[in-house]
Length: 141
Image (cartoon, rainbow, N blue to C red):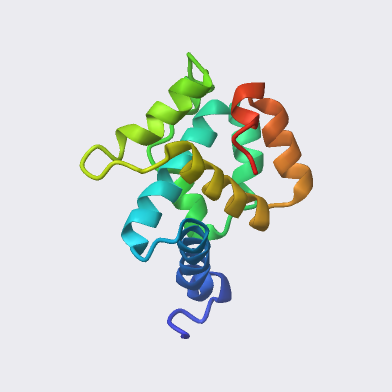
């Protein structure tokens, strides 16, 4: 669909839809709204567990609309967050699903990280993993 005539902007909804479909497929979900909340929450958690420089390098590889979602509410002076344990990362995701809890939060996180891995260069993914603590690295597929 040509709305603006600017390819990057016209394809942005399609790109987000593809990512949401991959999240839904990975988890056997039908509800894209729930997949969006999970994708957004995990992207924010990853972003906040990284240094500002590494977070920006990852963002540079995201599609334009997802990049905006990724940066939403970000205060780079507060990154990386502390404490940065695996339990804190998982709790950060769980906190967004209090009304309808996830069946397996770690599996849901792993699914989103797998989608991220499909769409971002392997070199950048390795840098992101290396910037994370080993316990969080274990969440990657």
